Amino acid sequence: MSAAEELEVQPGEVVLDLCAAPGGKTTQLAGKMNGEGLLVANEIHPQRAKILSQNIERMGVRNALVLNEDSHALAKHFPQFFDKILCDAPCSGEGMFRRDEIARTEWSPENVDKCASRQKEILQNVMIMLKPGGRLVYSTCTFSEEENEQNVDWLLANYSDLKFVKMLRIWPHKQKGEGHFVAVFEKMGQAEEQKMKLEKTSKLSDKFYREWESKVLRSPIESQSLLFGNNLYAVPENLPQLKGLKVLRAGLQLGSLEKKLFKPSHALAMALSKEEVKQFVDYKANSKEILDYLHGNTIPCDTSLKGWVLVCVEGVSLGWGKASLGMIKKSLPKGTSCVMEGLVVMIH
Image (cartoon, rainbow, N blue to C red; front, side, top):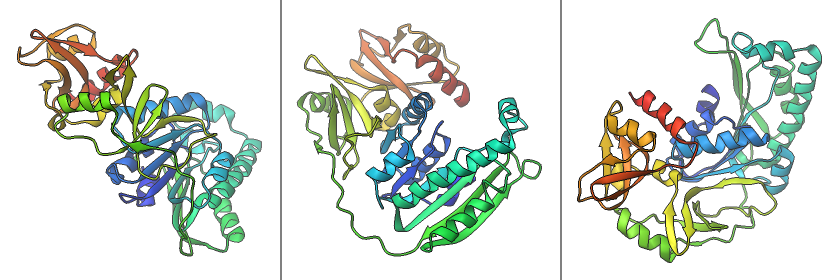
């Protein structure tokens, strides 16, 4: 993850991961931001954007906005908005030849030229979005000079306010992993305060959510909130207006409002630790209880537990359950059990 490391993000910054799927670099950036600031994760391909959103949810990221847009649409919406931008650009994939047969069969000199041209278009939009004083990391997983050093030269020739910091190649025969290229730049100048239209949010005060929160959480979540349909989100402060953008996730989905009741989301469970809730159970990864929970069976618990319970495996949040009469019934969304089984295997 050298590209994400070179971005040097800090808590409180406004950061863009432009070509973010499947989300490994995004979650690494989120870890460094510690839930502070705004992390915009974008992916142009709809199916890959869904996977990106799911991975961000699974990792419990609280401050991410997930979009499904092209770079031109983002540049129109976010001029000089970002402190840091990671552009892991689509490329000819030469660095993946060792493990990816599709990359080998799709390669051609014409495809290299096509990728280099597309990368320049993307970088033009990146420069519109990057604040003066901001940092840009451009990376690929290819070896071709047309997509790497020649694009660096093109950037420096066309943007006099761009300062070259460094670049590096990662060779698969010298380091663990596949082939990569990383270049780092800084945009000179001092950022002026941008008068962005902000999303109309409100203080998180929904009656039904607050009733649930007082029963389940040890302390309230202090955040702005946004209601999409019947889904309630906790969103970062100063969230820019999202009208006209394809939004998959706007911050942390707290849950849904159904018939004057609040139902917590799986995303909220993944964002919380057992220290933040009033009721939890914590099992070993190889325990029968965890297997039963993942397979949809009820699991025994202390009879003192009633209502919503955070189910954990060796200290890691796994999902919600509802306790009654000494039994917990799982509350996992459809399609997540297999993903959670994978998490349990990793922990074990």
